[in-house]
Amino acid sequence: MVTVIFFLFNVLPGDPAQMMLGQNEDSEQVAIVKAKYGFDKPISTQYFYYLNDVSPLSFHSTNAKDYTFLEGGKYSASKLFTIGNTTTVLKFPYLRESFTKQGKKVSQVIGETLPNTVVLAVSAIFIAIVLGIVFGIISALYKDRWIDKTIQIFSTFGMSVPSFFSAILFAWLFGFVLHEYTHLEMTGSLYELDDFGEKVHIRWKNLILPAIVLGIRPLAVVIQLMRNSLLEVFNQDYIRTARAKGLSEFQIIKRHAVKNALNPVVTAISGWFASMLAGAVFVEYIFGWNGLGKEIVNALNTLDLPVIMGSVLVIAIVFIGINIFVDIIYGWLDPKVKLE
Image (cartoon, rainbow, N blue to C red):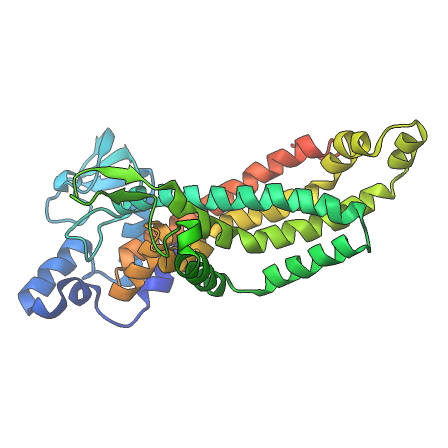
């Protein structure tokens, strides 16, 4: 993933040094910036520089003129040992500095915005899980009746509507037209300054609309998967045995059916939660939610490549981590799955 991200964004037309300097650039300044960030090196050398930057275990020069000079202030590292002119260190991955934020580190930018996106994604997936499982069970219990058909219509509609359209519609309807009754705003983030610009307040109500909008599509998927999986479980022999023993429908669903029907749901939830970090881009931008998605849009508009590359890399790592976690969860949900 690191390799794909590097070459994807470093084959773009344009000079990164000129992007950083804007209209104020001259040949001397461009040369200084290129030397500072290693842009004056061949693309293969720049690639190894990037690997060295993002790797926790990295190698650095003791020569102040080299890009990998350890004492340049870029790295916060613990020295392990030095051989000749090369020092081996253990450090936090260095995602470089933003082009447009006056040398601010990308890790700082991500650290300030990622928590807001995580709060939004967790809230959205919580809504999708709770309502999706409940409506999926109801839909399975009342198969082919009017309530089942109604739920299926709404879930199909939810899957087909793009998130950005839902965001615009919800912001206009509940934040503008019905504002007098909902008291919700069209835009707003989790943290907001007061009227004097002195204190920061948490505005939980600003989370409601973006969380609902972001959760609509996974909610529709969870409903469909839960319904179909539960119907399949209901046809198993052990369910018939439980009914023959006189267990109530509630006990059968609670003790036997739901847990065994959750495997495909967990798979879908894991994929959707990870993709929400990327899908939140449109929702955050429309609602003015100061998260990583909105930061990516701003970085794309200003061609701030380090922020884009760092953000995509973090999302990829989260996606991989979630999938590993889900593999572990399988062992709990299904005893037949063994973790080697």
